[in-house]
Length: 385
Image (cartoon, rainbow, N blue to C red; front, top):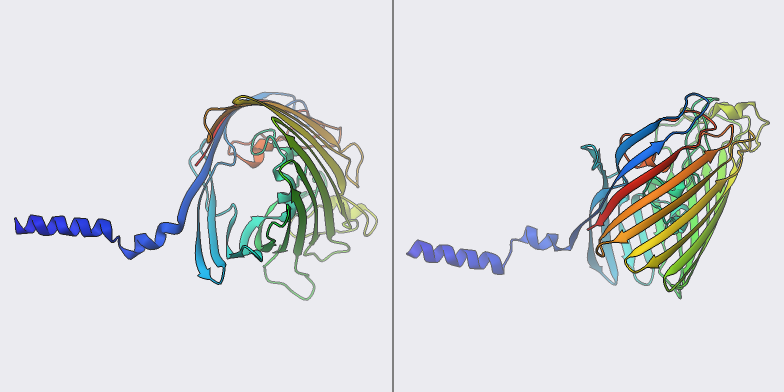
């Protein structure tokens, strides 16, 4: 009887006064997104293969994360986050490869962080993509990058503009009358260097305004590449504008990239050797791109559409492309949405852009060469927690 009374007192005490480790973890939050779809993809016909149909299950940037904050006094808070990609369609994932950082914030002074994070350039217009993290994601053309390892490979930039960069230090200002700004510095290369090899770096800036009805942004980013080279710099600017009223919204964005990579025989590992034959310091991979989108909500459903267009690269004509996407979302709850998407991308004769699925899921569809016109029909479900 004594032992039973003692046990009951111990249990009651544990409920009233949890152990320090559990109390200290109270500011830790678990969150994530599960975004899975069934995609039927027609590859179209390119220079290296005739068309075929590929069916696949895709995990569209599904992720899980831990984050926390702690009051450290004088209005400052210590913040941290660890976010990882998970593959719902095929066991696995990548630990801490999404936005992962530690830093300090203050309501009056803004936030400073160090780690891996989306650049201000990317953040300035991502909210305007109505097909984000799906096979119709506008990064198929808008803000896209792919490294060209040989003269025959296709590229639209050397280092990622619309990217999530490692080795970043970033500052975000507080929101003042709808205005905010963000600035980031990136070490693109932290490997050992020599007197003949220059370190690579990047800086990115964005200014944004959000009134709840009107959204406007302007962003600029520059890359100083590590090379034994002539040239070796690329830069881009982007502007976005959106309007939301009642049950509809419209948005537009435009970007322009330029570089001085002409005459550069090598640009780091696997650089775009196609630039070597051009005049020294000339524009090689620079181009322009535009994006238009709209969304109309009807009860628990929403109809949406988007159109993207990218112009020719500096070094070669007929390297443009366009993409048209249509979709419907049906919201089951605040956290769960069913969706269907149709998208078609049309490449010009010397272009080799692909649909966004390859960047977000295992089981990517291989390129079939220049001039292809891939399309896809996708059905899926997205749940946030």
